[in-house]
Length: 224
Ligand code: CTP
Ligand code: MG
Image (cartoon, rainbow, N blue to C red; front, side, top):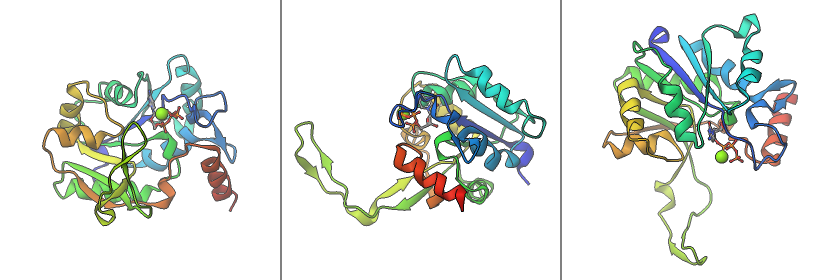
């Protein structure tokens, strides 16, 4: 299929401040394996190359994990940046120029299943340039001002909680990051270019490990 044309980029250069364990979040172990290992395992079978953005100073720790023979194939570790967007931009520069599709996936969403990434790739194969997984929102979401007062209540059935992996054609995502702009996801930078972003069903398993509650969820998941 598209394997030889697909690359995976994993922003993993965050510090995991909200988890508060004193080590980069991607190096935290759940059920004896690090989040970065799990994130890579679930996606790298779909790609010809995998580029990981590691926190500055931790590159060798990440390389050591992937030095094991069964994990070694085509994993490249580069130095991340001060923001998630900078980490992704750094990783994109390491991709081979023959890349056609790029899956960008947070190390923090280490339990996202391979099938979710496959559903993203399927849309790219059908001709989409940008595809994101998302879940319906259950809470009513408010826009709030700096003083703590509600400004607006967006219509809930139009809202989605967006996840990763997000998939893009190589030209689209490199163009989106060319400006050096910052956003909390890659699809936001693509949308600025006027490129349509297709939404497909997300997965509860793609939950972002952010707090200790999320880590407990993950431990229960692998304990099953
Ligand atoms: N990330 C990155 N480079 C940064 C900041 C974040 O590559 N400068 C990555 C994280 O490693 C993570 C993803 O972006 O895989 C989503 O970020 P988040 O969940 O916020 O992780 P952290 O920034 O590590 O967590 P915290 O904000 O609690 O410090
Ligand atoms: Mg962060």
